[in-house]
Length: 256
Length: 256
Image 1 (cartoon, each protein chain N blue to C red):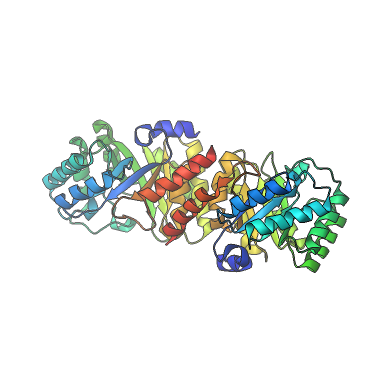
Image 2: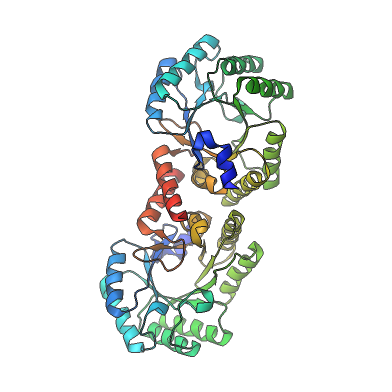
């Protein structure tokens, strides 16, 4: 199974699981370029630009210029373009949903990112458009679900992974807030089940200090992607890239 | 819960979970002293002497002398005295079960160990005697179960933990061979359930390369004890102490 997964995640993970994604959260073009340079030096497998942290998000040309600045600073690292909604843990922004959709379309059409994050619970009509314009642009679509307050039951998590696949995701991502160690097991179990049964890579993580183990060990259970801190965290419980690599290397050696 | 656990495992783990136990497997008194010295330098929380590797196991005075040699070499580290049966993955030895029982009784009475491992599937009459003479000597009793070929269902694992507690164990230990990532989740789930519901510390681990993650992450799910390599492994998949400490430190930092 994990062979198949790492093939699917191939360009990102170079055959290793999980691929390590570092977030960028700077508010301005210049700060973003600096952050991208510093983070790229930590050698993640990809970068996520959390554009909801970007002050001039409503200025499409400035967003495109900032994306180019990230490219120049970060070299060949694939870029995941993400607007996280407030409902799912993101920042307040000066764009409505139609504006975000238009921005994402422009960014994809411009070839400014390799992957686009879109929340699977967003409006169906928007989802359809996103699926169409990402395909047209050759951008891989990450359909995501976040719960910052709790962890749904294992069956509900499994249903969300399936839903993402049904909606045409290239990658299905779930991030939840655990309240107990049982929640970690529910997340890992649902992720493993999805990794075995779905035709796309999946990524599952539990947030906060309690969830940190899943950011390190998720790959063992089929999670194709983990988020780690290059310079600034974008969600609670993200581990520093260096620490993550160290722990992954220990697990790798131990697996033999 | 984990507060309670670490209190129960207190003298071993100094409040941290899991306590790290390093096996000694040398065949002679002198080799054992050397191994104990080298392993103690890696600073495990306790040592396990796997006496079934000891050539002169049938010579009680030599066993006692070897135990003293371990003490001298390893300083104040608590010692877990273990004869692993062939049926559960141990070495062939020149003693029958009655001989092993007599040896364990003498070793405990001599104050040569702090903990004694006894297999929970061994003869009931022997178990009763072991429970009595360990109590009399102030030795903590680890009742253990090993499956080197497979992983029983989660409910069966939970039943074994309960059985150990019913038999009067001070610590319940289960080690299994996983065949899939699902087996890891079954072991971790059963261990978590036992840690929450039983009044004694429990220790659960999956062996082999596939199981290595449980040796690192078991503590998150309530496992009070993990076995790591000081100099020589005593079971497949044991991680080097230095690697284990590194990974545990990463998890600790990430938990915040």
